[in-house]
Image 1 (cartoon, each protein chain N blue to C red):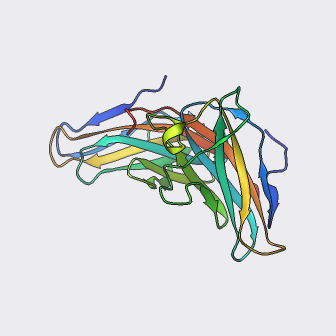
Image 2 (cartoon, rainbow over the protein chains, first blue to last red; image 1 turned 60 degrees about the vertical axis):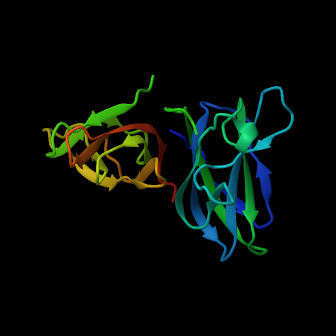
Amino acid sequence: MSTDIPGRRISHGETFYTDWGSRGGDCALLRAQVLMKSSSSGTIRISMETRSAEDTAATTMETSYPSSSPKLLELTSAGVKTAIYTATPGGVDQTGRGFMEQYRFKVTFHGGSAGDYYVVRILPPAFFDNAVPAS
Amino acid sequence: MWMLTQIVALNTSAQTYYTPWFPKSADNGVFTLEKVLETINGGITVTVYTKNREDEGSAPGTAVGTLASLSAAFHEVACSGLKDLVRFQITFTASAAGQGVIFRFLPPTWYDTAV
């Protein structure tokens, strides 16, 4: 049981990164929940970045779902939403998909106006590996 | 180790299968199925059921959601108010013997209600 207060207020103009974590597989389901929204036009964009343990630079990843731009998890209303990262044969270098050793989240308040905010929590990502040869 | 599940229709009768019951890890969950290959015309339906540990009998429990398509391969449903145990019901009707589906369930996302 966790008694942490769930979620974090993300305000207009804000961008931040989480700490790095270790991947649990080549692919992942990313889910986040909007607990509260006070914005008419702003959205929350959550993307994943990856790197090898010895790297100091990060590579921005692209989702396979949604498959159209922006290829990230975009939250626009209350509730839980999913994005899927599936690895490709060439790994992260070809399309920005497929995890290296570490990952982190980049969270951005996109658009909107001063005073806007969301309260959002990122649920633990579910990692998995390819079941069939990737295309 | 995860293994894919393969179900093959031996006839054209309606088929219903259940997974074993497994305990919930939170009051709400998002369940995901990855369909690797399917040759069943009309597809399959996967429904999430829940019951308490003390509930007796072989009844499937209470339906709390049916998986819907996110993409060609991935299907999910968000379920709330889960009881102690959860399982999946898989139903389909093949139009010819030998049709089948290969799939796997991915790890659920569990979370408790925050607001």
